[in-house]
Length: 322
Image 1: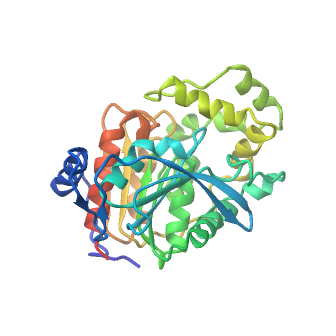
Image 2: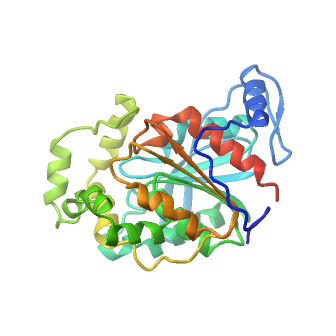
């Protein structure tokens, strides 16, 4: 259920940083003690990322975490071909504001959760991972954030687990109802998604080509981080597991609307997402909704526009009080 002013939809096309979030980050950067939204004091000193292992019935997920353990809980889901460290800037910003933020390496990316069957990567399973991870962490209510495939998972999880997901922040990928419609009817989205046919070819056709190309070159992502992504995907069976996300899913069957307060961060230079799905996403959110369409940014928004993403995320979380 929506927490605050459910049913009111607004759209903003420019970045509007929260003054309160700005003051929190400024105080943290100056070494002052700050009070997070959850009412938890953040200790003096710069926040840092710490590794975390999260056991579930599906296996053990690797993760990175930041912030006080008793802070308000935020779960961040990465996309392809990244890992949880995709959210480094956002994790540190959240921690500085007093939140407890965790970014797992998702199914297939974590060596401990790498099943062999293609059907084990259907969205039903990756969505169930969200609940399993939250349960393992001992989280009741939490805020959910996702980019790319992580956004696809987050849209479905927010709709399915609305009693536990306090708010949703989706980045780059529209609600799957809007995205599936765009794939059916919009030639621009069909062209933008042509790469998926290649990714869905039987193993190891695409795997061999991707690995032969070396570390990916992602706009705005430092080469050393791209190398980390490549090293993980080069592990035996890793890239096949990751590509099985594409082989197992066609984005249909997930038409449930989202009722929780939602922020959708999109961009106008995204080569993988056409404008039609971005515009139609408002029709799939019945709770409070806000669209931010960043100019001049591509698909990898959290890393290409880290400051804007962190500011918008903090502003959204601050607006959701319950």
